[in-house]
Length: 173
Image 1 (cartoon, rainbow, N blue to C red):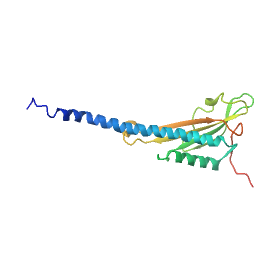
Image 2: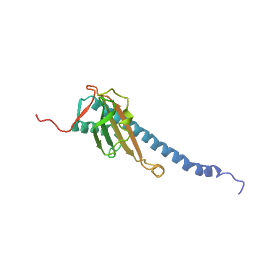
Image 3: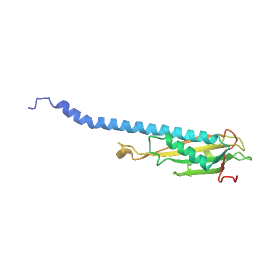
Image 4: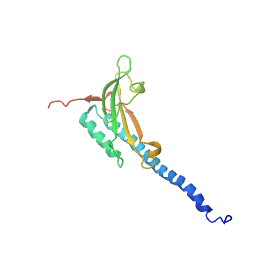
């Protein structure tokens, strides 16, 4: 009985199988996380690009482009998708960046601005900073990682004007 080796392959397989399953399921979650991060990067760049084409951003336009960002994020759930859009102008006297307007929804205000944009424009000009954030809940490896938060930023200059302004109210016709 002790010399028989018929079951040794089954015992080795039983030891290796859980590791292989964990690697397989982890690679699925890892691939989905990378896919979501790429979609978030595309959404941030697209929102920034559309807003940079305008001379003045309105809340209606901002709502429309963030709806488009939700469509870009499909097939992922956009319930945790948030944005922080900042209009930064470089002071005409010293060229220091000043936040002129900011609209944030469904996320905390992004840190590091305006210091991260120093030197990206001349005095009196400005940049538009779009930061988007989303939470990814892994399907299989939640036990090990928990939810992952992805954040991407896009920094663009206005195309029509040196500074993209924000209009809080609609003008009377």
